[in-house]
Image (tube, rainbow, N blue to C red; front, side, top):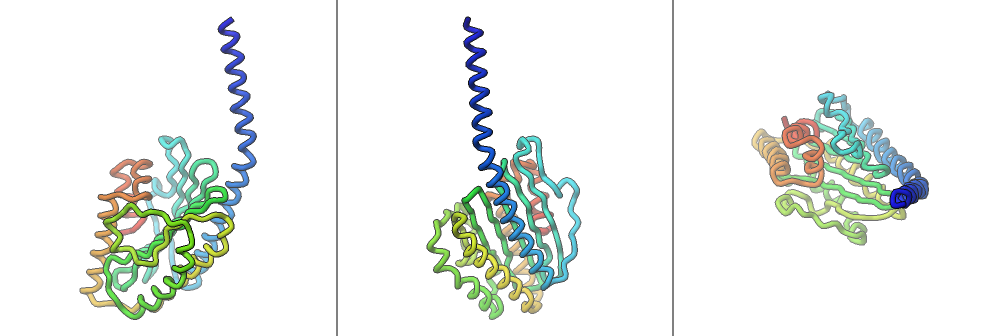
Length: 269
């Protein structure tokens, strides 16, 4: 009798699981389609805008790093990277990341040529159904003031009154707060704000591009300061940790994480 009862219980549980999956399926499909659509919107706009302003060529990366889709993470993470290089922009990386069944993430990281006084631009947008995580960081470790950076920093800073209306995200990286500019963005939003978020991004992207196009070569002493600042930031990031690098440590292990972050993400080796 007890085995018959257990059999019926298992059947009921199986039916409940199937019903749950079937109930959730429409939401998962809608969320995945929405994430893919927004990813494509940001990615295509970025690539077209960069192509109009710079001559970039593909940068070769190791086969094992071109797509990260490890079994150890139950295939729940899939990260595909596109890497390019140019004159003033030494490395332009964009990541297409899928997390779980429907979370989509767009990442852009630009590391400039050390011969120009330019910051790094780091972008992470996550689309989770109707929810958004929106992060733009302008990373300036060298702190060399000039009219060119001031002009375009001011163009980015214009959006800060609007940005303050959003739910702010806490930054648990005290060590780099003096490296991040005061107009970096770390906010949460929802799909009703998609239009304004895209406008904010376009402003930052165009300001960065114009700043790079108008940048003049700097002295060897200043160039060394830019290089030391950027490479110091990367080393500190690996030593002290951050959300993205911690994920790669989990997916790749400590040694491969170091290699991936230094050679692929930032191109400092």
